[in-house]
View (spheres, rainbow, N blue to C red):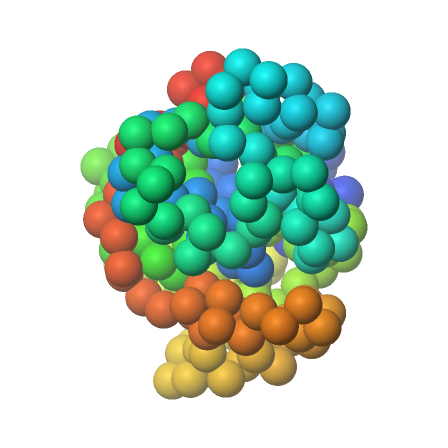
Length: 232
């Protein structure tokens, strides 16, 4: 298995994804929400690019979820908090979601052989899934509006670290993520809280979200894109 890392959606055109497993990463907060929701009993999550697409699914009975610029879309049922996705009343429901970064990265991954969702919340489950696969892997960081961010890179590095005995880190981008994670692994929550994106979200009073998204292995699920839906 070869591991590579794409740091932002603006760089994805440099990678061939067709024969790979692509792991989409948006730690704050889209992929953390997806793992938390599907791990807590949501039936499926349909990521879409626009608010209008989400509203169209809402008319079909879907729970509408998402944000723009970190803030809940006003007319949606829930925003982009993992605690929203874990509400008991969402068990068995279908959710449609659109976010600034994460759902865009999923859309750009659709030509991959396999698309799965990664977060610290399901790190061990994801690593176990990858170890059973023969596919090469691209760790795809959603970033922030096309820019690099710290927390997604740290998670990519965590995956590289977990698979270092089983995979080839084939690029400098993978090595950089690996070495960054090793330098910060003793206090992930501290470094994620110091990130620019955490500071950006702080005005929305979501400190608990940020701390939760840094927790390890809360769920033993690996959301996978089947058609247009994420399921486990």
